[in-house]
Length: 118
Image (cartoon, rainbow, N blue to C red):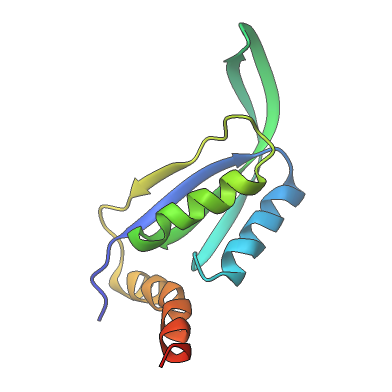
């Protein structure tokens, strides 16, 4: 059915609540088919020449290439970090049933817009 490649978008977030809100926003806009909010982990990084250690949550978003730019724009609008990490990773291989489902889910908004314009 669908042959569009899937992408996994990796986004660390400061709190579980922020992660849930981000996921709900992107699902409501049909930019993603689904997401995972992973347990807290420890992030280490340098910021303003200081070693930082923070608890974060990780959001993994499943989508297609068509939505990557819009997803990034939405994240940048609301993410509280000065320099949020947003990594889009092309999925090399996925099972056909899942790929078709993701493509179908993120295509619904496009189809709805097309019918409104007719």
